[in-house]
Image (cartoon, rainbow, N blue to C red; front, side):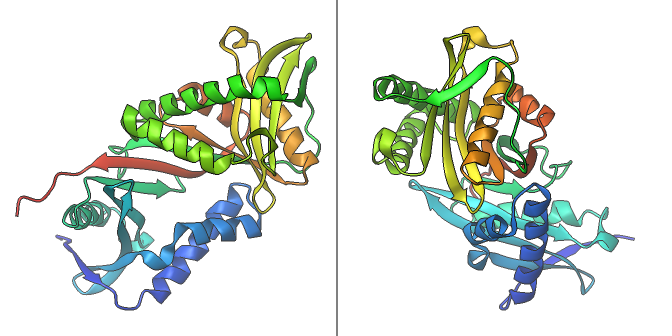
Length: 305
């Protein structure tokens, strides 16, 4: 039997939105976020802005697909916010048809790139999309045990300037390696993001800047923001200097971040890992950090007519 998917835009997407929020909230809490943090993530997702289409097969509803096109620094970018086919109708090609419909819908509205944020493995459907990054999190329910011989102390003002320059350079390199932006766009994004995040530099409230030491020698640095989400500390970076890598200090740096999060009263530590950084992804996996969201994207051709 041939199955052909059809797509009808919904005037009222309240039913879809309720189901979408329920599924997303369950994914966020399963990854270690508390209820308040999951609610904040949902609010940031902006489900009310999506255009939602019902997927049907011979008049029977089989799922939904949600799309939006937004302006990102002067570039129109499409996003697939949701693509779900009911379990009883999977394996009939509806998922691929919905993805292709979403890509065409975005391209016809001027998008040159389509992004998707997943809360589960991409599988075959989005395996062809380039991995841009992952948001990872781990519960910190009890005082973490630091690895022997590694301590974390506050960064001094004298150390901050050199750290900031190095952090900006590393951020730009991560963005370019992931393929998300060109080098020029990455520099612009870096300047803007750091200015917004650290308006008062080392004294910016809620941020912690650490220097990691072993045997009295500096081995790395850390930058954390407590209360980034309710009960969640966000790790902007936990960096081990290259000459000290391969000695177990990566896990020690993460333990230092977990200690700082716990001391600040947060119950989870969260990181973003850019695509292409396989070493960091492996480290986070081995340390028990689960994927909260995974971002992928693909370029789409402009319609000829």
